[in-house]
Length: 342
Image 1 (tube, helix red, strand yellow):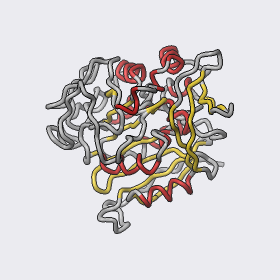
Image 2 (spheres, rainbow, N blue to C red):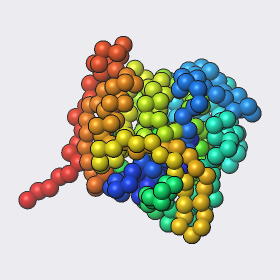
Image 3 (tube, rainbow, N blue to C red):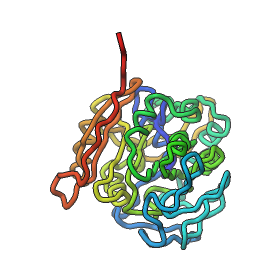
């Protein structure tokens, strides 16, 4: 899970919902994406008091422009990143030094993804780590998988990416760094300084930013990712989907990981290391495919594909144009998730 406003990626595969396969679990996403939905309307953007961001769409190059050759650390749309260092601020924008991040008002009281248990786990690359509800239910977070290289299930997601990619709740950055050799511009965002540091250290581009804060290239990203349960960020899937809809280009797509079960729940969880280390409570959501379809339609998306890989469940959504329900660009055929020859 990434911490685009909350804990990192889905549990046991980026935090995912209880019982979910070892893909990023929804809860893990909560842990990995500590993003909390804004207390105001999702359309309202709040800028940290000590950070100056350019108005959405200003001073940012369209996706695909000014990008480095395949294999190099590519800068996300409109943003120049320093080699093996903290990403440089987009033109007209000042970002804080790595490790420093001013929380939004809703995050100040409870910075879950900065909690010591999560930070320690990312720094060591090892668990145990869980998302724990007040009733005692726990969801294992797959820290080791998040900190490893992209696996076969992850590659089914990467192969479906189009245009410049925004990884929301990027966590340690395995997807961001896996896209670089493919020559595809990608930016990771996460509210955890430790997650951002690990992503940048691995050669990826990342910003310590919530998905609900102003971001570079708004309205021009070709693909947005909510993997490892990060659809749960903020505890309000519909508000999150509406926000992502304003980040992608017309006809852009969202690739999301969902819970295997038919579930649609809102919960309060804490990051717990099972050894007495517990973080602050934050809202998280667990969503299965049927629920995601409902929320997607209400937020202006249409579901175009569903697939499974290594026990994890994914969906592709396409942003519709003018609410007519018709994707602005066709969905290209995706490679099969499994191939066997007898």
